[in-house]
Length: 291
Image (cartoon, rainbow, N blue to C red; front, side, top):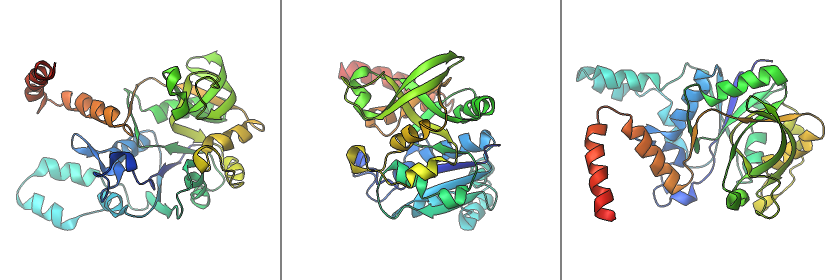
């Protein structure tokens, strides 16, 4: 079956970025002049996704407004003949009916957030994108994964190597390498201590899951951090179906981390011809000043 739907768990409070996220959803924090969530949605749409499913929570109105029409703003830009920015604003808004919102009424973890989308997803395979993981790639990572799914017809998870001392921050897999970036998963463990980790191959925020995952998420098994973990449900799914890891082509920025967020901003800013000529001498000056 074709992958038509993508779930975006966006109910988190973004406590690592307080006080900036006290009144602004963390997904709305900008990388240069575009919010994180827009990069994620654009990746989904460029990968052929037809329906965006946001699992939201409290204080997410700004995110919903971002993907809606703003007639007053458009009229103002049109009257001032700011056609370029007007075009950018209009292209942010997908076609009517493309976006669906559902709520996660309790902060019970990533697995619970995805389970909250079960009725919207229905009985078909679907994608999950975590906006915190911004991935710079020539070809959208989700599009790469969809190609693998079409070959394997099983759940696919994006994986990357991490520093072995950081395994307790991720879901970690043990796998058998098959080639072309694909590996067959043998085991999944959520946030293992470095001495207990089966490898240093970490799951990051791109998934393609079969609908059977909802049966295991529905068991509401609480795991690491007292939350319903997606990794635990995938471990149960693995007893019934194959799961494949995919080492994607691209560079990942962990924008849930303050340093990773700044790295992403610098990288994307340096690609902008309108500002890079000012940034390069400034960065050199700051390096000398801070050294």
